Image (cartoon, rainbow, N blue to C red; front, side, top):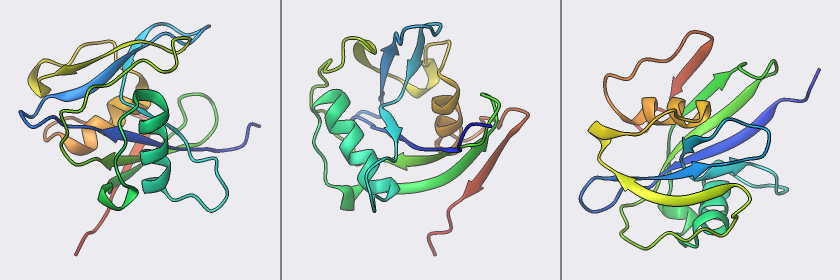
Length: 149
């Protein structure tokens, strides 16, 4: 059995409320739309730190980890092993997003939340569902809201 995967999906709203999505073109996968994000893979790294690092690596947008906010933790088994993804909300920014990993992303665009494109990368759909009201968690996935009291 594969080891569990830990990751962070980053919701990057613009000042006008549109959200940043990339056209995911990873070899061997069906193209999908995806939020910036990736694995928590640095020793001692938090979800917020991973989100800020992945955002900078994938888009060139640099935001401090201290401004990232974990909204929920999502668990799914879509790949046949546990995958834990933090839904991380970045502060609003209109900074341009650049393709820094052309082998994995064909371009970044901002979309209104009521007109998101599809198909959506599964973990990104889960993360967006933790942020947007009314989006249901698909069967086989679990959402754990973070209590910010």
